Image (cartoon, rainbow, N blue to C red; front, top):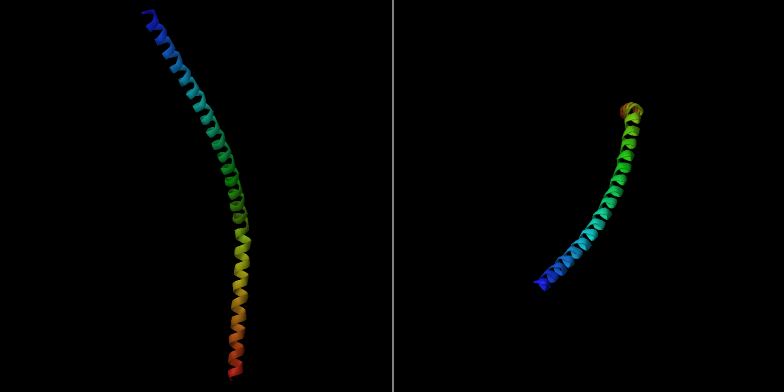
Length: 92
């Protein structure tokens, strides 16, 4: 009976050692994954900040760009009108 207890203690000790090694390896892998996810989240945050800055720029410049487009459309209309009048004068 004493030998069977020794064998059981050895088996349990080996199983606990294997479990401890697996737990440590799993913990290391999880910590590496968390570190990688933290780095990815930091990059995503930088990208979101950049996108927000670009959005703010376009929001601020939308008024002047619309005014420029409006003036360009007026100039195009005037030029087209002058060219059509010139063609009519040439046809007469």
